[in-house]
View 1 (cartoon, rainbow, N blue to C red):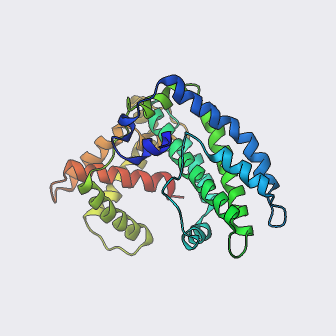
View 2 (tube, rainbow, N blue to C red):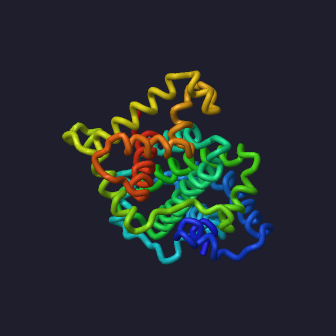
View 3 (cartoon, helix red, strand yellow):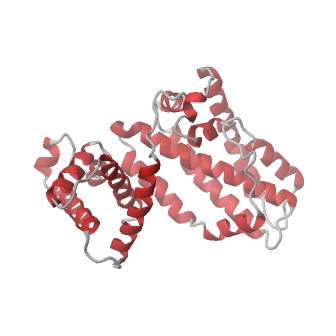
Length: 292
């Protein structure tokens, strides 16, 4: 199992990885060496210029201890559907926003975790694309080649951001070895998550009439705006009143207290810790990535 497969496989997967620090970092360094080589090979690809030797070398570069796709074969129909639905520009914006929202000391683990999650996904996707090109992609082969190139662009963005983190190796080791576990939702919270995501979609598409979630969202949003507009209050909380201060505030632990107080102010029902946790996650997801 690849290192990132284990890290993102389950809540306790990282705890099951028994490797020494030197081995883990060697695997990361091996991956880093593949980036410039992949760039050369992928940029050469074209529907009418696609050497089998180049695809074979690409596959070797993608066969890493860092991540793999063993037992995860995608059908051509499924891969084609995913290719057609990919919005590359939105993924680039998402990575930049991740840095904007989480690139702060207090959330450094979450920031690295988010970058690695994106990297894990695109490395697996690249392997699927190369495998399909090797076996013969039925129909226009321009599609997977274009997506390989867009995936490379995204990978270069991720790699640049990771390389700019001075303490990345320490953070990476702590995440992989389970010394810092990103909290995950239990079964009940996942059910609440699906329900609340649907409610958020209704609210922000204008298709939802007023209800408890509608009032809760409005109260929290207004509270955030009021706080960040008050520079004195912001500085009293230890923040600098810079342009991204609202994103910083929403993504730091203190935001949870604001959500709890907002829930108490509604006084219409009891809000469990699970509901608070889910609301915080859904609100942050919307605020960070969909609010534009």
